[in-house]
Length: 107
Ligand code: FES
Image (tube, rainbow, N blue to C red; front, side, top):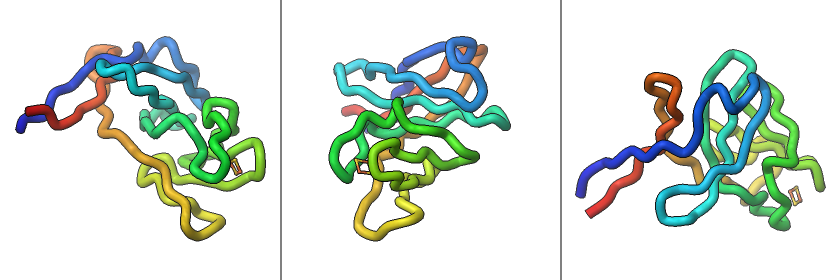
């Protein structure tokens, strides 16, 4: 197993406080968030409550707020911060030369 990084977007494509949906190399989707203090995180694309797309949510600090029933998720950890029993998948992200890269273990 080795960690492999794939570019999913350019930092310039995402304004601070915004996000976009990107596709991983295997076709899986993720949402890439850029916080207002310029940190980048990536999560699974759907709210685990009732599958609302999280790119339609609102980013507040390090939390995305699902627009449907207002569950809040810490995009650094995936933890739901206002209800129990829900969590998001999070991906490892790094930014190099303006490229947003997601790292995953591959055989
Ligand atoms: S679908 Fe996201 S909070 Fe209900």
